[in-house]
Length: 88
Image (spheres, rainbow, N blue to C red):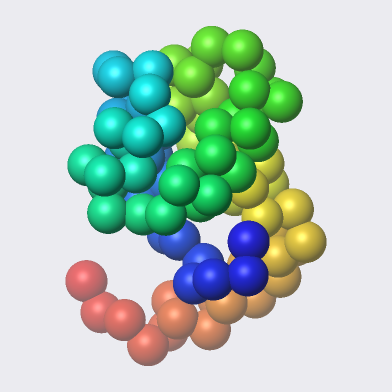
């Protein structure tokens, strides 16, 4: 995955479309992503569990570890950085 890093909501959308259609071609067209991107996320999902629905129920932190294992350790620092800068 050398392109733009997808947000977890974008990955979830891709997986939800794939879960409905069971087609990579339909999924990449509907999601507006490349075929290789969809294949990569489906492959990583199935490596965790054959049922896409099980993976979709995981919390965002666990999804991040599945899809971006190298950056998952760095994110808490970013969360702390932005926590003080964003008012809700």
